[in-house]
Image (cartoon, rainbow, N blue to C red):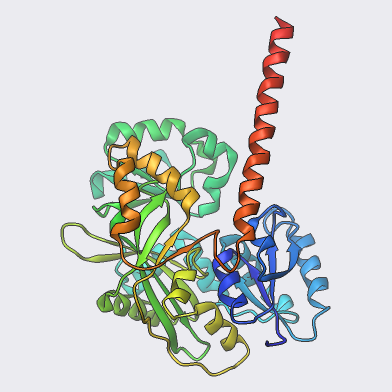
Length: 408
């Protein structure tokens, strides 16, 4: 076992990919009640004060935590907030941690969709036409130039996680606007004080036309592994995160993505979101995320352990470019996929029978997000947490009913 720890600010896929290789994993999260914490591969837990809400406290806490290690832990990311935080404070944090990230300006451009749009224009990247929206007039003007339908999304994804946005339009990653009436309705609901939006050309196709390309490019610019996955279903439906996915071998898509990263001189891990135009068959890049995917375990199952490649690169350990091998693999986040099924069923796009059959109609072994035969406790933890939450909601419901009856 290597004596250098892996400090994972992320999900189970990274934890198991590293833990199964004998790497000691420290999990860092802003919430103590997470199932990854009880994994047998999680040897230590660090509670983050708050990347966005308490940045100063988080910085001092991380500096003090890092001082206890003889060898600087290698840091891994799954989220936007942790990537931006470590990029912003990398000069100070790199004194105590091994941080392998793209340059700070590159990080900002990729995670700010307006910045990504500018980057796309500069390097002529294969992306949909995208416009910055700061007002109702902008929305109407650019929707006329692109024609309906259009996609509307936030400049920064975390903006739509704010409660006032959720209360106004619901929980969404993006919204499909089919006509002027739907656009007018959206503009009536949306809180204008947080208007930073993007209006994007709609690329026709279903959720099954969405792909993710996962890769790692080392500090010298060499590709150390590439895996392409296709989304079978997403949650939320139509504009969500893949919840049931499978490996696909499309060398031309791999080449398109690697050439794109080469154009912008990218380094580090990359999670590229693409969509295939259902009529032309062309592939369009929607996002380049400088972090690991929530389903990076599918890469490891295909023989391309990207977290280990990043770990070795951080420690200057030579590695080869890994090629996927063996049978195609699948990844399933069952809880989200069940909710996705209900959503597709509501739209008349999927029946319960078709949903169940899909688990047998695709080839390959399934890697589950929560459950693993060699690591079963996280699933038990999820069951117990759900039971406790159900009991708590039931008690609160009964209490409100009794209180209301007494008042009457």
